Image 1: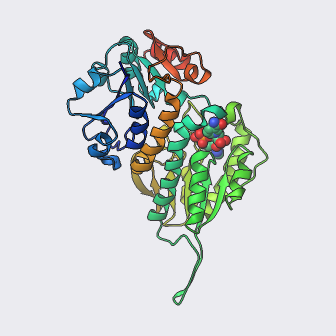
Image 2: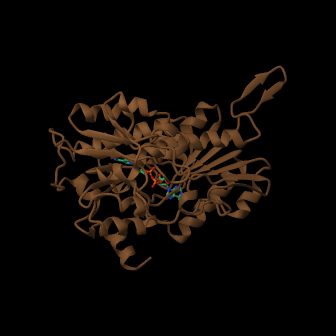
Image 3: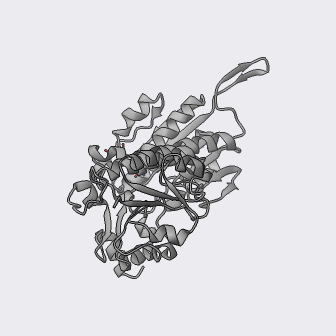
Length: 379
Ligand SMILES: NC(=O)c1ccc[n+]([C@@H]2O[C@H](COP(=O)([O-])OP(=O)(O)OC[C@H]3O[C@@H](n4cnc5c(N)ncnc54)[C@H](O)[C@@H]3O)[C@@H](O)[C@H]2O)c1
């Protein structure tokens, strides 16, 4: 019997992505895996049902039947507790679970005895790069952030020499130069702005400069383990704030992307700094989902404070769903090369470092210690 893979339509408000795109479905059906896609699952991302059926997928209109037939459920967002109730015990679920923010769903999947791989837990090792959904979706978010900034500013980004006079280029400041920040820098540069970047990891300086932007230097190196940042000391925070405040005051658009995994986003832009910005300036806070890098950010809203427009967009990858889904699906295809045998059967040996690191729930237990602790604490 071929493995039965199901791709449901995402139900989260505003979610336009889909876990598999037809091009990737084709690769699965060719290798003998059966793929069932919920009717309309890819529509809001630009992939009609006909594109899926053309590559050998079955289209299912009955959600409970779809889930009920699953051996492997592929999703972007974690299944809701209702959806979990439709999935047969023992089935495998792969999604961006965001476990700490979805404890009820994690608990439901544990109690249902599902095997759950949470893609946000993927170890950041070279071999896992092609599976890294955090990176691919951050690429989309960084691009969208630059465009949102360009849309909200009352200014041109590029320098223009016209019969109506010369226009000075806009200044864009990007705080946090990880995957999203670097993409925001590259996109703002392509739009013709003068760009500055800043990150607590000094290693990011070279990448920022290679994109034609200036790197703001502070004599601090806060690179922690695994390429992520560690938290700064109080004195370091003060120095950072002074340098950042000056750069923020001079910028037309500030794009903030600073994050520390598993923690609230660091606050880099305080209210007095916003008040020092020129009227009409813009802040695009990519960290809105984890509390925001700007003190005034309202997640999910665009507000005006001190004559500065502050956007706190949520789920930016969903705003570019065609390519966000394509990249997500390619990441999944790569991840599944570890989980499906050559004959298309699900493997049960999860000893591979990547599978082991990503495995959130199995055999009625939550295996990721921080999530298990949160669940035990009843939070
Ligand atoms: N497989 C791999 O090897 C792999 C895959 C993806 C990313 N990475 C690397 O991991 C690093 C982080 O990636 P990410 O984009 O997912 O990070 P992230 O989303 O966790 O954080 C975004 C950025 O915010 C920065 N930051 C944190 N606190 C800050 C502060 N107070 N001020 C300014 N900046 C601050 C971080 O250093 C990071 O660059 C990058 O170097 C990236 O290249 C490696």
